[in-house]
Image (cartoon, rainbow, N blue to C red; front, side, top):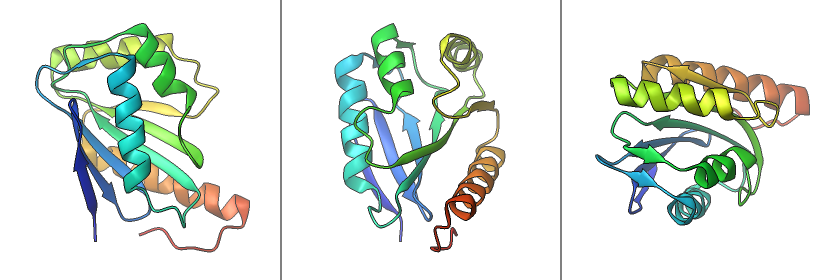
Amino acid sequence: MNRSGITDIAEIIILPGNISHVTLLKGAEVDLNSAKRLVQTLESLSDHNIPYRAGMFDISNVTYINQDARDFLNSGEGVNGKIVASALISTSFLGKTIGNLFLSMSDSTTHPTKYFDSPIRAEHWLRTLMRETMEEDGFRRKVA
């Protein structure tokens, strides 16, 4: 069963295997406070029996993400588990621009982050990385 929630900037669905699907709302302007509320909501919905996190972030409708919010989201602060990877998804020109800006300005060493134009491809990539990470760490719970 998927768990879901909403914040002032996004709709959130936690998919099986602790993969978050976050869809930023139309016209969303993400600042540090809204980014912190988003992470807090994600953590409250996550399965804490699985110590791994991965997220798909559909940024097609976003208007702006400020630098403090980008730094916070990239840092993993507030996340109670290992961040395996993040996937940015957008089919809009503005979303693609923001996604590419985010990727070019982020420290990719914290966790892999990749841009996609398809949620299906993004989810497949995340599930593959989650499975590989769990196997490497000897974690026995099966990813859906």
